[in-house]
Length: 99
Image (cartoon, rainbow, N blue to C red; front, top):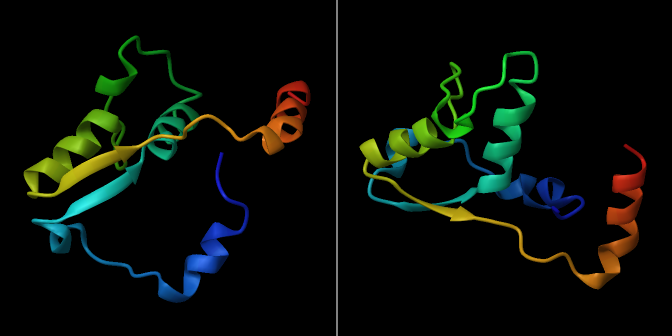
């Protein structure tokens, strides 16, 4: 679901580091961003039954992104959204009905 304004809050402490610098580290990956990114960047291509195996340069997909991290001795921990809190019910309903 996301946190409104989160990236603005984190902007003062953000760091851009080469992936190689994360070797030996454990990193959290927002799995929904990877999955939604795979779907949205490939809307104009024919459907592939095994979405997780499709490779689209330069980003790749879930399988190849994970493989790339593991090859660099980086351990990815996939993070998923939990159940939306009750106070977001109206927002969710609005999103569903506005499509």
